[in-house]
Length: 210
Image (tube, rainbow, N blue to C red; front, side, top):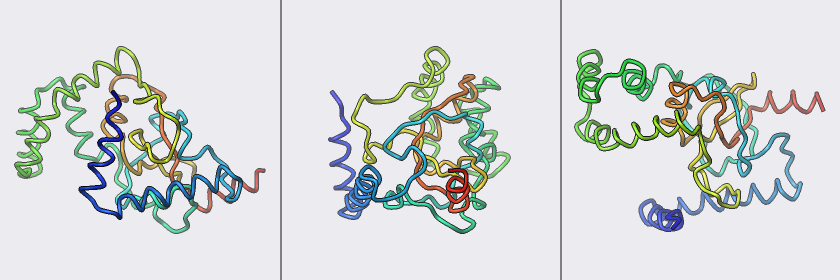
């Protein structure tokens, strides 16, 4: 049974109409791209593509909402990011899957180096520890598989979603962070993702090449 529709309804109830409105805006963009009403030089958010995991250089500090799906944006947003290697998630995954430390020891060492973590965050780490261990094992044995066999759509954004910088590298926008990091430690070179936003300068370079 696919629980996605149920989770969707719960999310709308939790976050209110604005959550659904963002989805509708994303669907509008998808419709425009599919009908050729909006120029979009790459495979879009509703088409999963495979990229090198090392080409995702960081995660956005301020992610673009879903309503920006299929847009090209100017500015220095592609300079405002956190390197993957500098994230808390990377610290925990590296110590777990490279150094082989248990989760309690990693938490203890992190707090000694960086200060105390919120109790609810610590509980979340421990609650999901077995899930991450299983994910590492699955990636190591079987590689990264698409999570659901559903019709491609902007509504289904559980896969890694990225923005393209002016240089053509990728920044994580939302979803897939743990899988992205763990895949590197599991030796996975190619990961699936969806393109969300292009930098305007990159968009122009593609037009010039056309």
